[in-house]
Image (cartoon, rainbow, N blue to C red; front, side, top):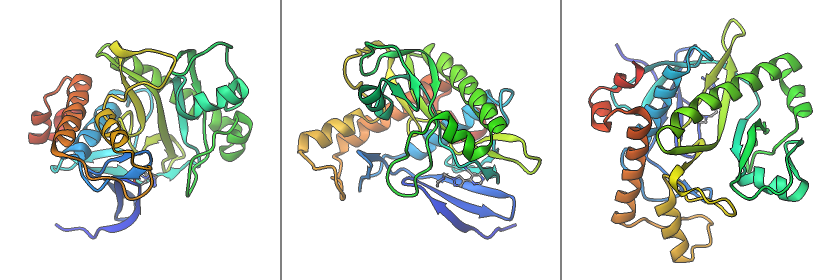
Length: 287
Ligand code: Q0N
């Protein structure tokens, strides 16, 4: 029983293949990007951590919102997914003020057209999570858009449904992560529609590549926070004085090893499952 793999797309660190007409294979590589540049050195097992975490979250949230996950492959880095009609929106939810949300706030007092209280600091917790959709940029950066423009892209009713689903999913993940010492500062979700027009969560979910993970015991608003997973890589790159343009630097073994440990630690803390158990039997995250 063999199947033809047609490559249908790639992200910076993931590849997408068609499996027949109605399924896709989503493969997470061990590539790592920092400051928007993919580095020449890989982090062993990073793709497996991200695939396992996504599958864990899809399983935990399936009653809140259906999703595209069909099965995990034995390599622990590949997910068979239902092929959906994707919505042209990046569905960002923010519980803390970081990245482009912070930039927007400094410039306008708002983010994605939502007015925020005055006096917030960079990395402050928001009074409540906000849905701040952005457009999917083909090249360059996604652009934050207000609810009006986002609703025009998908229709008013669908927009309301997506906002409610994204906020509900984020709240569940934040609570779970918070109980395990990890702040999920913000996240980017992607949704699509199945053959019956029903909303389904797609892509990856609540991974360190799609979300900001911060160690809860180190939160100090008033500046950017250390990243749970990529901080060794960022610190090393900063120490070189690299100009953050392609190509990035090779990483030394101790930075690779330290970073791999952080990814595995995030996996084990969030799932409560030993990473080696996941490698031996990926389906442990589906139960
Ligand atoms: C899809 N993207 C953007 C992987 C992620 N289930 C789906 N059905 C149809 N299309 C897509 C999915 C999913 N997931 C999502 N492109 C197509 C993000 N990609 C970029 C490449 O790596």
